[in-house]
Image 1 (tube, one colour):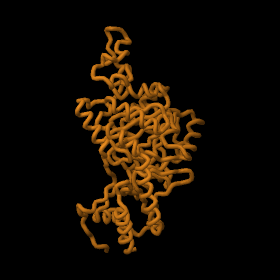
Image 2: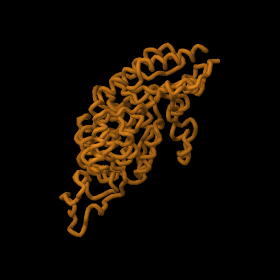
Image 3: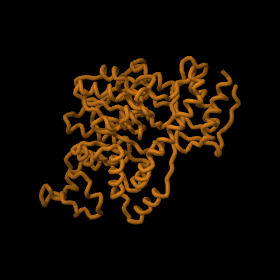
Image 4: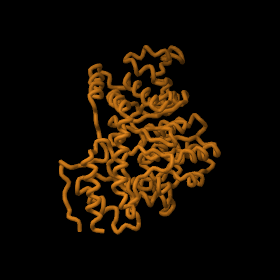
Length: 408
């Protein structure tokens, strides 16, 4: 057997990374010195910068990527959806996607994924549609673009709203276009392990002014205003809409819909502004790591499925996912245990939500209902692929795979 070694503090290669520069620190201190911690000018600046990066008009910053999904889905309730209607989501993704649909008052309808791309299988989406289906929420898992052309076709033919969850895919492209620009709305997460990070935080982007207004209301308990003007002033008397319902009705305490408490704060936005400015550099560095791992571990593709782009796809890797093939003479846990013991952090590939996560046992799905998602969820894992992994770190990781494979 391979000799077991313990990870050391000197060699710990993490799944995610945080890199705050001087500009980000300066903005944080500015917010603290102004005493403005809740949403303010930095939130609006971050919204505008992130939307502009995608060549879209509106950004709505929220507290998490989960809230971004929930707010976007809840907005559909004023676009013809009713509570209890369905939104199709992939059976393999982080559980927050399905949770957010439930939080918004709709129901996740699961569709299987393709075992090569790990993303929604358009044929499975077609099969999952019922009379209660109102939308498709396409998730770009691990930073690889979902098959947007096929999903756009399904959505158009079946009169469904197409949404995108690009929480893990900042800067990825599909047929030359940035992901997040195909659906009527797209959502992002800025969690600490993601490509752009504000620690926590999320965003909805769209070109639809009315949907942006709804999302701004929904993130603030469903208030009658869109919370765009008031965030710039501590004194909300500046808001020209404050008494739009009459002098005895203050819109700060007038609620038109059931909303959430999910605003982003100034400290997070201060970090986000710097991150958007560095976005292209971050994506390039991550892609270089992706190319290095694919090139130097290609000799093990008989045992491992690696992370390669399909035609027309440009991956922006959140991480480096690997699936242990059935032909491999070892199990996933043996490989991940070895990597962890040698200082390389690993995470399992989510698991199939309907059949492998106890939280969704109530839906009544059984083993074998989602073979693609179950396969990847039981045999897949991922390691870091971020911009702070040095050339030496990357060579060390590949060397560990070499050491492990010597046994086989």
